[in-house]
Length: 286
Image 1 (spheres, one colour):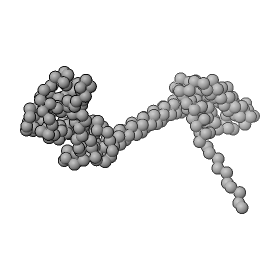
Image 2 (spheres, one colour):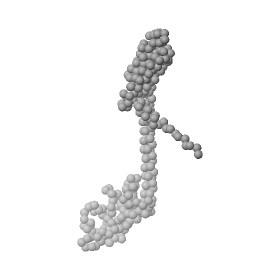
Image 3 (spheres, helix red, strand yellow):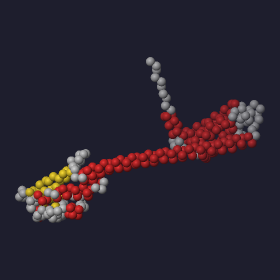
Image 4 (cartoon, one colour):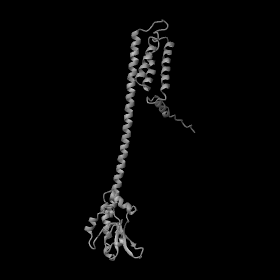
């Protein structure tokens, strides 16, 4: 059986390096400055060991300059470029064997190159970070907008479903009225009945949930009017001394019920004692 190949993930290494080079991080600034200084000294030592500035490419000094640009800002990178220019220029002979020194034009042009490269690198690195941050912000905003759109679509679908279910109830199918007797505790006689709406429609819900959903989709008045009309259809079968009670919202569509009811008068009796009401009619309990 062949041995299983091992996979090495570079993600943790890259994440750690990104945090280490992050210009907003303050914990590694001293370490990074020491690393830049170490690279400057190392480049100078390599140049000296090689035999002078003419025997080793002075572009090796770009390593600490670019590292400084990646981690720090313009001023620190400028200081790094000036230090590199001094170490690679007047402080370093052109050839240690012959003892020839560098011409001022040589190390000045090299120093200007170091400074220009460092400042350009700082600008490019900062621009890249700004664009990356803007892209991440845009992606987060797009994700939030997608979530809101999906939520709005889900609410719209739920609203359409509820509206269709309530519409089925408004067509008179699946809704029925039960009557619960109301007795006088002193005499034990039935003085009224309370109309209770029940729904035989899927999905099973409490009656108050049906009315609440109906109000959410703008069909609350229609559903209450339908329930009250069905309740009022039983008034003619009640004895003269028994009243009809119904629970309605704070602003019931009484006008629509009155216009649709034919028969004994419909009189809202307010929040007074039910026993004070004489004759049949509709009472809204407190």
